[in-house]
Amino acid sequence: MKGKTRPQKKGEKGAERPKQIPLWLRRPDLEKAEMKTVRFPKTAAEGFQQMVMLSETALRWLRQSIKAEHPGASEAKVDLELRKLMARWSAADARWIEKWKKERDRYFRG
Image: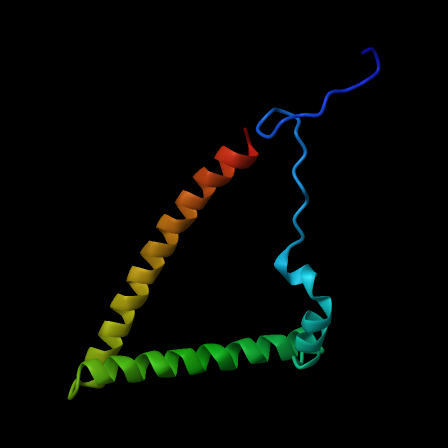
C-alpha cells in the first residue's frame, strides 16, 4: 500500500469539504444588474455631502418619532429625549466594540 492513500471518512482530520460559493457570487448577472442601478458619488466631497443629507434625514425622522411618542412636548424636552437616546446608543456601541474585540482576539490572535 505504499504510495496509496485511503479515502478519508467524514469527520476525520484533513477531510476536504466541498467549497461553497458565497451567495453573492452564485448569480453575478443579478449582482451586476443591481449595481448598475446604483449611482455612486464621483468625488469624496460628493460622497460626504450625500452622507450628511442622509444623516440629517435620519435625525429629522428620529425627532418626528420622539414628538409622536411625546405629544405636546416642548422642543427642549424633545432635545433631551434625543440626547438620552443617543447616549444609550453610544453606550451600546461601546459594549459591542468591547465584545467584538474579545471575539476578534479569540478567533484571529490565537
